[in-house]
Length: 297
Image 1 (tube, rainbow, N blue to C red):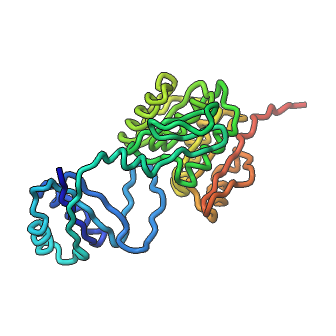
Image 2 (cartoon, one colour):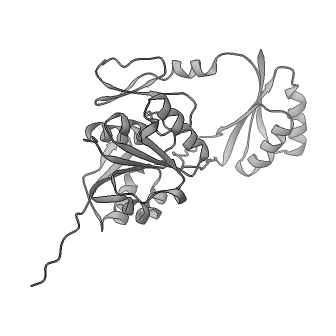
């Protein structure tokens, strides 16, 4: 079976209306990418970022007349531009994805696609399925968090993955020896992906998935949050309360210049180590101050 692909660019404010029309015309899938050189960095959980000029690609079955659809869209939305029409031959898309995703090493941890083995047979292996939410270990912020987890002693510990995406950090923590993990996200697809990845790696029985409003009362040994600077600042009271005294807070999703502002929001309770840097992204790691007994004379 072949597919017909229609692609064009449009202003971001048109995306919602045009997407509805594409669905009306029978589009099987619609994707959004940058329409110019504007960068949009990693989104917060549950967000769908758009560029000021966004490129839309719609996939239809092979019998669809995409040129007629384009003409109707152009009449309704004159500011649509840069039209392309293509025919795509069917293929096993997940296997195509695997051709570009190879085993990734993070110290004693390897992240590998299903069906592949890490070069080191004694390594901890995390099997990741393609196409399940955000988080494969390729982004610098995810890599920074995985490196920290792989270098920590997690044996018997409780770990919280706040803004879990694909659940890669929670699953990694369990494989690396954590006794239990709690994965939290506002996006139901993220929680579904996390459960699927945990089951694939045979750690589902030690994982709890929750929406933020359903989080249990917990004294975590480690809280990892790989989101964005502004949400991390806003979440400072919530994340701080989840960490037990003496426990660790690991924050990423930050550009280098945002580190000080984020650290300031937590500094009353945490003592931070120097940030770790990868490309222009950083990871902050802080230990919660032990509660001190006040003695009276």
